[in-house]
Image (tube, rainbow, N blue to C red; front, side, top):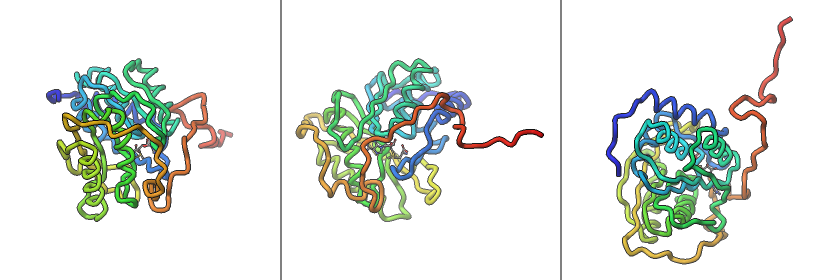
Length: 276
Ligand SMILES: C[S@@+](CC[C@H](N)C(=O)[O-])C[C@H]1O[C@@H](n2cnc3c(N)ncnc32)[C@H](O)[C@@H]1O
């Protein structure tokens, strides 16, 4: 991992603000709940350092940490960062926002692919590392986290490193159960826990504004093998309560309604009372 550097805080916060301005509004029914801005600055600096010089796959990324990481590096606000980044997300609005930002800011090493993680992973499978901030699995004992992690492991061919962002809160019972399940799933898949950074991030989550997440870092064992071919996930036990209690997946893709001017309020959001 690259050494941390002194960063220009004002430039970093303003860069993250550019990214936030470009994000679509979150859809709570799919567990899109965005990380708060200050935590995004610190998280993006950390991810840029962790994945310095490496290829990085994001399995879902409504937060737009991928964009922040690429942008901070391209702007010279940090002098480290991944060599190549691909975002896999089932929301075309998110993929479109990533692609438009990359195009506008000439971030040639950032792309997005429309992909539902319940489908077989389309490849490539030779990324160096993966990142995921999945649905946190409060109602299915972390099974949704395991699904996103499985796709991350496939993206790196079960060799390399992963960073999983999930709930970490001792005042509630379920985050501990999910943390245990996720670590057990990783160990069964030939990975070990390299590091745990507790209670790092807060979210725009109105019914639980104090719920934090941690960074869980995994690394594959040196002789780890791909366990089998990538396949669609259809087992009812893995799909039940995927996005919360009684909220199993029913949607393959969230489609974007094309607009002429992104970043501006749509005209049906407001009306005008004219001067007399
Ligand atoms: C589930 S949210 C978790 C909260 C996170 N802080 C966020 O809002 O990005 C993470 C991302 O996963 C994406 N996602 C949800 N279901 C998915 C699926 N079945 N396949 C691929 N991506 C999915 C969402 O669009 C979102 O960008």
